[in-house]
Length: 221
Ligand code: ATP
Ligand code: MG
Image 1 (cartoon, rainbow, N blue to C red):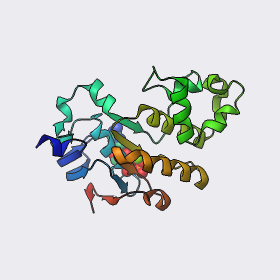
Image 2 (spheres, rainbow, N blue to C red):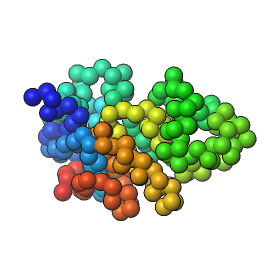
Image 3 (cartoon, rainbow, N blue to C red):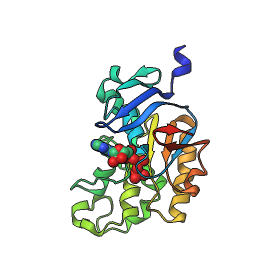
Image 4 (tube, helix red, strand yellow):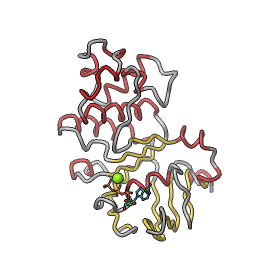
C-alpha cells in the first residue's frame, strides 16, 4: 500500500556499471523514514555511487530505485531535487556571500532561517567572526576556508533545505570531534522525521546509525 512506502527509499535488485566494471550487483537495500542507515566500506567500493543512484545522477542497468514507492525514472528531476538533500564529499562553493552559499537549495530563505541552519551546523560563531559576517564573499575568503568550514557550509545547506530524504557522504570527515559531536546531535534530532543514509569510515559517526551496512564487492553484508 502507498502509505507504507511513503518515506522509504529502496534499491531493488540493482545492477549498475559505469562502463564495463560492475559497481553494484543485484543489490538491494531499504532506507526507512525515522532511521539513520549507515554505510561503510573501503574506498572505491561504491558508497558514493549508491547515493548518486538514489538521486538519479545515473540510471541503473537492472532492477529499480524507488523513492516513496515511486521509480526515480518516473519522478521529474526538479521534484526529486526538492525531495533530497545531498551532502557531498567535497563541498562546492560559489563566488557569492556565505549566506547565499548556504541558500543554494532554498534561495527564498530568510536570514533567520539561515542562522538557524548555521547554528545546527556549528558554523554560526565562525561566520559572525568574519569581516562582513553572513555577507562576506566566499571569493574573498579564497582558499582560506578550512576543509571543515567548507564541509559545515555543505551541512548547513542541507539543514536549511530540510528535505525529507537526506543523503550524507562523509559529512563530518574533516571535522574535529567537538564540531562533529554538535552536528551529529543535530542530525539525530532532525532525522526523526526524515529518511537518512550516512556514508562514513569513522566509528564515531557510525554510532548515530540505527543500522550499519558494509559495502563490499558491490554487495551488502
Ligand atoms: P570513497 O570511499 O573513496 O569515496 P566510494 O565507496 O564512494 O569510495 P565510488 O565513488 O562509489 O566509491 O566509486 C566506486 C567505483 O566506481 C570506483 O572504482 C570508482 O573509480 C568508479 N567510479 C566512480 N565514479 C565514476 C565515473 N563517473 N565514471 C567511471 N567510474 C567511476
Ligand atoms: Mg565516496
